[in-house]
Image 1 (cartoon, rainbow, N blue to C red):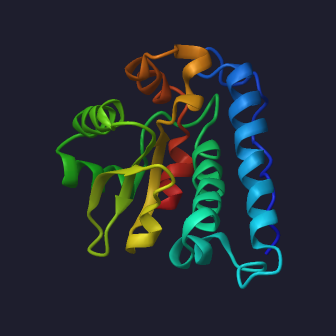
Image 2 (cartoon, one colour):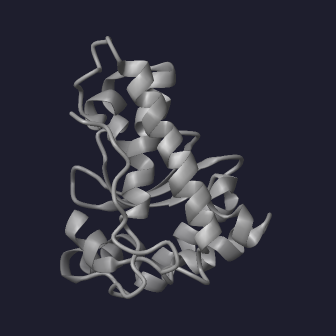
Length: 191
């Protein structure tokens, strides 16, 4: 499998003012690209040289896992955005959110609280469990729910590089803005 930086479906200015051009240039153009470059270098000549990112996440350890998971996590995150996406979940996902959390508003509150409260750096995920129910989980560092047999539906990157240029140390403000750029058509299709 070729590991490469995915093309964004929007311009670097398109998510402003919620996520600015400089943040995308830095976060996507430098951080995400560095994970891609590191993973290629680390896997060259190893059993993971032609592995999928999913296989790397499920099997690898140490730097190969960290960089592989960060490539996958960032791709999943960046491809969840659109300046004109659907503002709420569709059909099956909407029903599952209501069943699991009571309402879309309550889900947003619980997800936002988890993102604001995660200590240090990491990711907050909405995942689908084997029984079809949804759960919000927090993962430190490069943590990815695929490693635990869960299906990712949505994620929020709470590493400081995801928001510091736009929001400095105000993570809750970044999380609030995050909801304005989600494309629920894309996210609903993942469910």
